Length: 298
Image 1 (cartoon, one colour):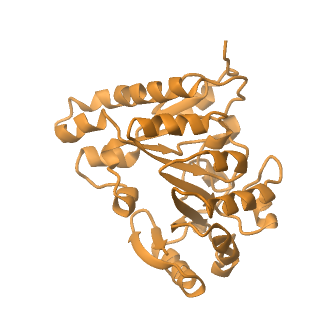
Image 2: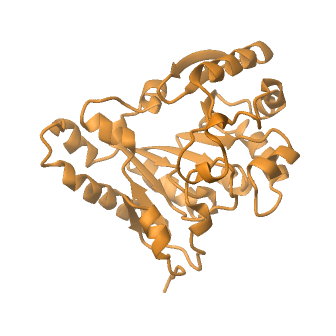
């Protein structure tokens, strides 16, 4: 039998709203999905990339992480140790079922768009980015292929510490999330369980050769990584199709480690991006002020 070490009560309370799938996966309704169902706005990913917020399945195949990033709002220190893995087929099917269960409570609400609600029960987009590091799931490439076979677009967000899996997966859109710009900053900001800087550099190089759409996501933290020039060499290494520059948000567990002053305003993000424009071949494509994120493209 595949087993996971007991998830403690504190973790379960902190994962309120999550639907646990199998032994090590989870699904949660995104805030923007809920807003979209009520016609109160959509995620910046809909604005930037054309996906539908109300049809997006937000999930993780691995409730574990190999880093303890200073800016992460999730309860990573409480995540369990995995001693076995569910199959990709199981996770794919059960994650879609879990989404339907989570949506069941919206049927009786008067302000919900009923057409959108019915569409939401049949998601056509998967954001593999909820919590933990998805490339630690050893069958992630199979999972992505299964979702793809269901004609679902797949967005995979990784910290780049597992280049072998980054090479294997073929999602519709691959993100590498970047906050560090050097080995020293990696150790300070990402607080990894081992030094993964060389692996991250490998993943960025792999990204440059991927056939899928690629995105480098840079999370800005005031006082830690706010020098645009520090990222130019990494951008040149990865040559992504898009760059998302996003503000750190002072939420959840990150509040125990960072002051609110570490969270940039949107205009500060915009000024950072304007410097990136001057230093690279990338140009501003779009922005979302409410999410404090600016998109650049080649």
